[in-house]
Image (tube, rainbow, N blue to C red; front, side, top):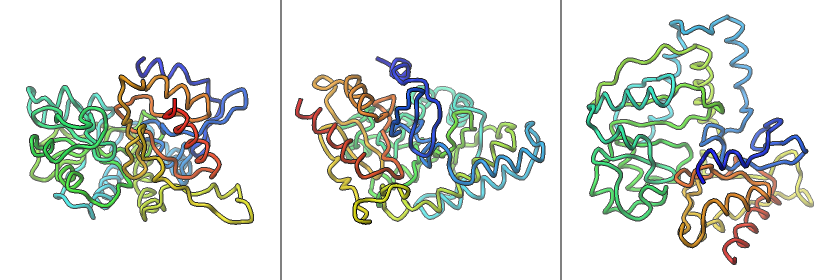
Length: 326
């Protein structure tokens, strides 16, 4: 079963609020897919609608020159700045296909990057090698990468995901990649694809003309990433509107998710099971029936929501254990 078939298993969604999806029968689903990370701050992130309304009121819908591209660049460079790595230039392209062509042009038409664009080594870092995807444990499945695999292939293009755990040798190597592909939390897939290139990296074609509305929305989400509580290492907390028993908040024991199903890096859950022993399709169905939407692709991580009720964490863990125990 492919991504399209798994997507077809989802019921028609009536509305999306925060990290929840609601269908027309009144069922609620906790979204652990989050549109591949685009809804990392939720489906109605704070400040986005206000920002878009303000730009809409100016009439800036057409792909006209504006200050919003430069503002997006400054915000993104500040976000990436504290990480180890080189100074960078920022480009934006209309969609992933245009970004793929731009990166391929920067490395040369014959570069294997054309055929392995953005495929992650690791659920949190990711990357593609100039010599093709690395071999080794987890390579091509979103799992962890051994030091030998990294030594065997220099990373030239790397995914950058927010809220990583403390720096590891693998993460530091990917952060120094000539080209970074930030996964930014703009819920719709129609947002431009941003590419950050090291000052000593390849020269990419100039940025596409993009609506100031979308650039301004991306800038607001980049700024929101810097203010998110998960930056201090928190992964999830009880939903504020649902007070817990006796007024006490219980912190989910996220370490319990380390299991035969998942390898966790920060809020990212990489599919770790042996596909021959436990198929991803059956696991996807079991979680969907229990009210959870996993990543549509096992090569990409499911994501722990920014917040949820403690009972939902317990239920998620119960589904994991039930699947593991057959």
